[in-house]
Amino acid sequence: MNPETRSCQNCKNQFTIEPDDFTFYEKIKVPAPTWCWRCRAMRRMAWRNMTHLYQRDCAITGEKVFTLMPSTAPMPIYNRKYYASDAWDPLSYGRDYDFSRSFFEQWKDLFHAVPWNPFWTFNSVNSDYSVSAYVKNAYMCFDAGFAEDIAYGVTIHNSKNSIDTINCEWSEFCYFCINTNKSHKTFFSRNCTSCSEVWFSQDCIGCTNCVGCTGLRNKSYYIFNKPYSKEEYKEKLKELRLDSWSGVQASQKQAKEIWEKYPVKYQHSVQAKDCSGDYIYSSTELRNCFFAGNSQNCANCQSIIYGPIKDVIDVTSTGVNVELCYETIDAGDGMSNVLFSFDIGGSTNAEYSTNCHQCNNIFGCVGLRKKNYCIFNKQYSKEEYLELIPKIRKQMDEMPFTDSKGRVYTYGEFFPPEMSPYSYHETQGQEYFPLTSEKAAAAGFHWQEPERKQRGASKSAKSLPDSIQDVEDKILEEVIQCEHAESGNHSENCEWSCTSAFRIVPQELQFYRQMNLPLPRACFYCRHFERVSWRNKPALYQRTCMCEGKAAKSYKNIGEHFHGASACPNEFETSYAPDRKEIVYCEQCYNAEVI
Image (cartoon, rainbow, N blue to C red; front, top):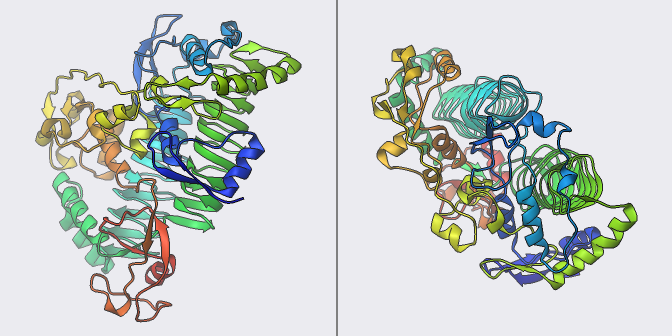
């Protein structure tokens, strides 16, 4: 079988379906996609709100509950205790399949009718404002697990005493980091492992007492990649005044300038065999995957970091022990043959379903628990179910749904993005594939202007004390205006999520004082999107190694390279776009410089 080039139904660009893809589609009995991988990923991500909380009334008790489901969504919200109880039955919302209407129209009606869980959280203590599991004292943390004393974190696991982190594991006393693991007292850093007392650094492993460094291995007492004695380092550290906002800003700016003067590896990866994509760890045979770990034989996936995960395509954000899944997002552990579904866990042979857990053989269902052989929340016998499913799939092809942009949805398409209850700017899509309101609307994504709460700021960010040493307890009573709202200097992402003002909570203030860190000047969402901007976007570019040998003008090699004095001939796919400033090396040349 040969590769096949098709035109994307959405963006109209050409995309290629590989022979291995066709083999997979045949194995799980689905048609080949009509959207390119990028458009498919954006369509899925438009159905996942990760970090935006709303306050709504419980439809049973009337009490105020926090939920990820916005107030504009029609489905009722139950409090967590009632939702998990046997006081209501999701099967009571069951309905017959109507062959005179399209599948997606009928599913939308069911989706809007079935009560919704505020958000998943279990075995958590003192963590009411966190979407998490097995956490203690977590505040405004999302996708967190097995952690303690954390705040403002996203995808943080097996960690404690950390604030403002993304994709961090097995770490302690870390602040403002992304993709940093097994580290201690690491601040304003990215892509670091096994580091301690490290500031403003990237791609450092096993380093201690370093500031503003890049590409170091097992080094100590370095500042801006320059070595110092222990005594010299301590004196220099005092001069940097990292307990002050002005000192942090100055050092961070200088660190970014240093990062651009040293080579980076074309791919962020460790023990990745036969893999293309970026941020890949302990995996084999991955194609076009981003943020993947302990995975095998996967393609076009994002955030499949826990593993083991194998034999999946077009999967975004899933748990452990997952196989043979396709077009799913926000799926939990123990999944097999789950297709075109979101917010689902512990299930097998499930299609077009959401918020279902520990279910088998379900189609088009919402909110089921421990059920088998159900269609649109109606119970069938095994024989009835197996007889009806092929008829529904055929009807989906013969009576497709057409969205407002004229795109046709037959069997094999994920849910139309215009049916999502979330505005695109508050979904995972905005983090990976950011859009303006105009472009989102043009692409058929749901977009709604955020509710701008009028928070009367009592203090401007500019008026905050420069040093943490000068901060008094009364700061806890202040409402601080976000510096971005104050100046209008929003990034392309944080503009739509900025809360305009924020408060410092006691847990935060204690941490800043303990770590000798200055107060932040921006709200949680603006800080979050600043860290998100530190990682490369999920896109690949064909490039040639920038190692120029002895003719190099920008960076002079210090190691011996296989190509000698001439320029390196190696080519590769990388997430570093050609217009980026970084000096991008192939793995061989990079290792010659850092190992």
